[in-house]
Image 1 (spheres, one colour):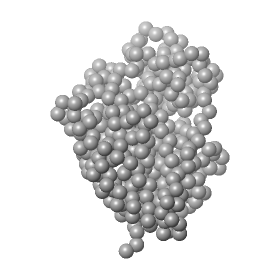
Image 2: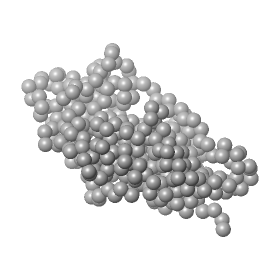
Image 3: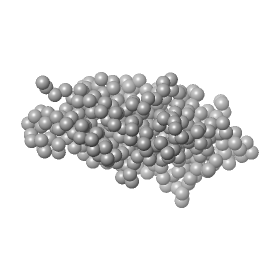
Image 4: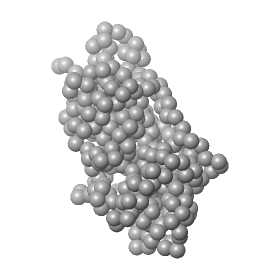
Length: 369
């Protein structure tokens, strides 16, 4: 019987979901007062002002991988180490799960990398029985890959490894010293407290770029497998970091496929796939997660000046939300003081012309609220 990459990936992910549930439950039990661990995701969604019409299940791999890859409010990253192995590996598995869930076309290399990541993740959690069960899937995928490429098993494993990434973002103009958000904006308005996370506000978290494929994927965007991969990566980035500016989204997506720099043509090609993915893109070219309704979203994510977040690539809606919150809390502020407070919320102090132009767009939104 010939090797079927899609069935192999599905078997790997199904097994992983069975093993992760008790691992997550044990780690978080001391913090939950008898609640299921999915209550953390409920609290996070409320904190982020997400619109959701379903309930999380403990055996859902999508929910499990969110727990491993996202900051869990005041709990931080309780599953990770200082090298961020868990969140990095989990991010790769989130993307392959997305492709698999949408019946995307998968290669033998995809099947091997998925099983390899699953084995190493379970080993990290010292679930050696679980890892041993996935090991047979990894071995089968590796043998199929070696046969497909006509090389030895060891050579196939080496060829399947993805290249190290160069995420060469250029820094924004540096501030004179640290700029941190005021303590005031790090807490939500009274009445928004949750049993698990309290009244804390979600801060900005950048997407951690992970290797997903080789650059030739971007050279073959007319093929089903290539465009499905690109759309899956872009969707995961938007879900994690959105609303996100299209320029940043195309850049991060390109990095995930080993591109060090993107030409204008390449950016347009990736942007076209973002449009095809059915994600909402507003008139300012910000791409929104499906979990957020732009017209009713009232949240914002503070950050300091070391977050690597360019002010011009923060949605004016998000900036306006911060301004409305600050103005409600401090109606006594002058216009200049309010502007300074908004800039500080996003790690800015310098009032350059482009910064003030962008802030003015947000102020127009505030005036309409």
